[in-house]
Length: 396
Image (cartoon, rainbow, N blue to C red; front, top):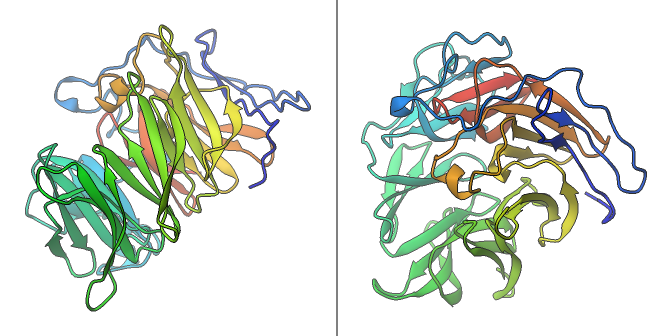
């Protein structure tokens, strides 16, 4: 996507006045201003908090009054993914055309969404201490991270065969290749060592082949295999610390610093052509900033609205973003959000980059949503509602 450096995209004004949230886009060159929507619900009092037990707020998960929005999972979800081709059930059972929706519940069991009936359990053995779920782009493999924070366990699940495979006990971070054929992982050279080898393993070879890319003296990095030749090492996000993202070339076996910033979070389009970068400013305000970036981390545009990258879906020409109606300078982002210390009431916008336009696609008071983990399946937008932790489907 060719985006000029002079472009400034502004979307959702977060001043809590009158209707609380106005949407507009502005080009720095032409100063074209699009009018905000005709109406928008009043912003609620901050902060939103989930009721005792972590269940949904009023209206969420049941008694939904918006025809286009409905919960599709029966249970609370830790994470979910899409399988583009059917594995063992018919499309009528899955209720999702030629795709299946699978998820890991909070007990670590895997379910298949059956929209016309009860969800089907694919694995019955629970996994304690869930930490992360990683899925291949084709949806056929899943890796579950669980257990102790300093010595986590990683297990690979084959969706087609239903077989679990434990991975090396010294792995500290992992991700799938964009073509779903390989995994990259950081593996400690010994139990107490701080030296990690970045290694690639082929999942399709009859005799699994591993290739060492380089060795690192580091800890607490996550991996994101962005393109066939680019693996990102991402530090843990916090407003208290300057985060770092390093880029590793698989072909050249070299590493370089890509992005830095306090509270650093990123999210990229599937083809990695562009993405979003979230950072916060210096004390005392720690004002959040959301930017459009290319795969090399170069800023292409500044957004005048603020949300977290995981609350957006990035396609080739548009953004689908959940924008909080109840912003406040009193919260500590991204820390409070990641620790579930705060909850928001979101509206969902579609922001068309090419047409310089935006539209509200969900703004109802019921059910209240705090949306993360968006996926686009046909004419439906899927996401997890943090209030009841179920998967929701929004018809577009």
